[in-house]
Image 1 (cartoon, rainbow, N blue to C red):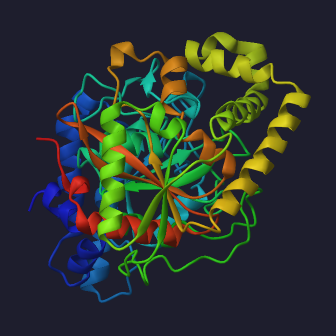
Image 2: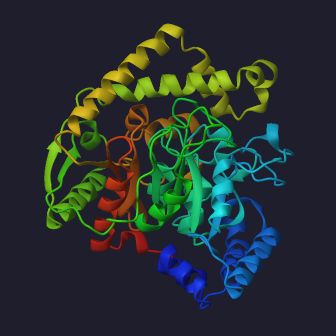
Length: 463
């Protein structure tokens, strides 16, 4: 079996085969490493490959099965991490020259949880510099390329995380989402990507962008795989100031119960007027699939949704400028032009502006809460366009364009899952956001599972 065969099986099947001795973790990891060696020179997806450590962990995983030891829910599953997550003894660049020779001294909390569950870390993935941007056209480590068309961007800031799954260079990846940095790469690469409720997954050991909006999120082909990883990563971390002590749901039981009689709202307004017509058509076709699955679907207008974009941008960039205040003052030239421009914009946000944006956030959260009293689920495009060409992707403008539909839900701090819903221009993936109330990750995972059982967009592969 090839690595593509393994990924067609999904996590539950792979772990089952490993537990029964029908699949060797060493064989699986080696297949991923071979794929990385073959494709990384073209795609520039991995910044660091942990080949020796991954193979050693795979051998230990195989020995544990042979010895009859208890194994975890991700036993032997190869996972790759965005290069803003700490892995003890491994280089952590954050996509920036400021940290080019930096080596982490401890595992991030999410890495500890992945290891405890039996996952095997393959390496660290390319990203937009400091995770501040939507292109992963990194001027310091080279651009990451979209597997569907290497002349195009994979999105960002978790561009390597999206591209690695799409290219079968890992079964699962982990990214971070502040304004859309998991959802955008998921959409542009044709995979699933989850932004959980703010505070659901620990951010400890992850380089921050915005303390107000940062979340860690998994990417994989299937909603079911996302559920397995979330079950491991979710949970309160008392040592992380952004973590919230909220009971962890059961994301697997009920996953296949469908959406019959659910009330589904398709967002109107700028969510339909701005995207390319082909994208709007695909979202409407996806909504029709939900109707065929027994859901009641109607269009929903969210007043002032477009206004939330600028408010989210102000708060996000102000937070980022605060984190980078000393670097901006002492060595501004060390930043790439687009990141420096955005940080300088954030530094100009006044306290009054931030306070007004915060009040807008409260109103927006209340409006969404009231909307969810009438609807179980909302649908919207993830991006209004497919992946742009690398040479045409200027960092500030392209990021602004790609985040038009993701920023509103970052501001709301609610869970959102981007799922593949078709292709445009021949072979360029399009993603759809599934949006639910705070802490209702189980709702969007169940909805995505129903949709993916009725469609096969998530199983399409680069030829």
